[in-house]
Image 1 (spheres, rainbow, N blue to C red):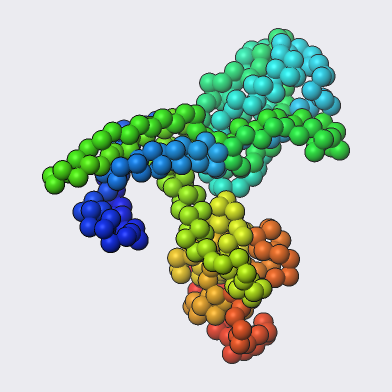
Image 2: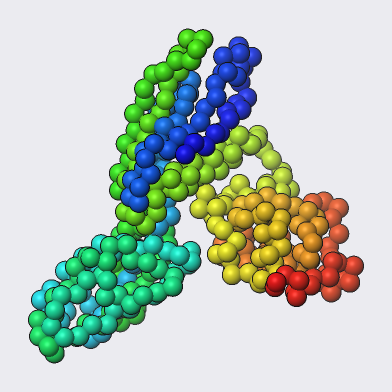
Length: 357
């Protein structure tokens, strides 16, 4: 499978003469459930290492994953308690729970439950099935029940995040029975890359970047690579639009999207819990992330069919409550824009029946 990405850099004239002949592409050499190998090139000399290092760091630190952040075990108040008729201690159980790898199907937090009794071994496959989550290592051993009277009842709290989050005991200490767990969100297990020289027909010296990615199977290597590239793209996009430090307040407000973190910028509209009308309008306009929406002026949003002031205010309120914008801040309003009330009949009528099809 080959995906072509043309290089269109803004270059000095003398460099452009050489680089305009480069037709870079990324080739998927191997793609398995937990492994992928890719070749990116040809690239100008020196850029292979630059791109490889950047991708490697982002893959390790910024890929979104799903993990258990705390558990509640019936009859257990803290991690130093003992459980009758179960071989493992609470600390050992927590370590086993930490190793459960979960694939999210809904991009939202949730809960899972484990209910077992009687003598025997307990594995991750015994966790109750859910439409939102999938256990990718069901063979993982969790506990050993010693007698027929043994019983184990556990509630798992599932969250999405990046990297590795050390359990915060103080954060949960106000709720009796909640046991924090170190959360391994990152689906990336290992990343390797190397650079090899190559040439084109006109003997221009170039290089290829070979990159290998191992994952825990909750996300494949290709999706992880794309996500890492988007994180870098958003960061470099901000740098490419850098301006002088002394900007007036209105200029800063008009580009409030620059204050978003990469994770906030890439938050999908499905994660916002919007009304079906607003969600469908945004999808029809190909506005799929928070960053894309906030970059769009209000006047342009109101031109979307069936997207009126109610929809805009719903978005603005949602961005404020979720921390994407300062509370009470209205984005995308330019000087001279008319402030329109929700009850203004001149606004496009929003047909909910049309959007709910």
